[in-house]
Length: 232
Image (tube, rainbow, N blue to C red):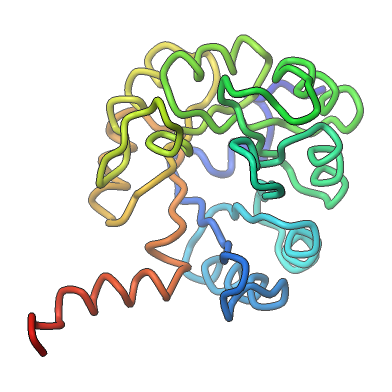
């Protein structure tokens, strides 16, 4: 297997923007064709890579674009729902993604496997890279030791024991980028171009932006809340 440092998909996103094209269940845009169109639109705007979820979304985006594709499958109502089991990870890999994103936190996985077991099986059976989404420094260290090729700060502030904040966890980005031998991708609450640039300055290998680019419901709410006057 090609080492992560030499992998062309990683080389293509180094120092650049990856856009997360996802919609929540029940929303008007929660449709594979729509998400594929969104992916094509952000590619036209200069995105160096795409992150997306759902098997059909991934298949359509893979067929439409040659950009590096980070894939995941959100499933279940437990704490671990980002590609929660090995079966989920193998199904994501089969869509043709370059990188399989999985929950990389310390929380128990639904199938009882460890993160290291999951990563090894994905490597051995598919040859795909694995991105571990973590929420703390300790989880990032453990994920790299478990064999993850990439570590993302995606879940910082989204576990019961991690630190929430209004913006990206730049301290976590900086600490992991300093101490890990694998690329660290900044993700989570990157809402402005300035925050994205700050993440790169903190040492991020690449930056993933989702909501601020591809979720019009939330973007509209940001503006509406600022425009609406009390009592109006």
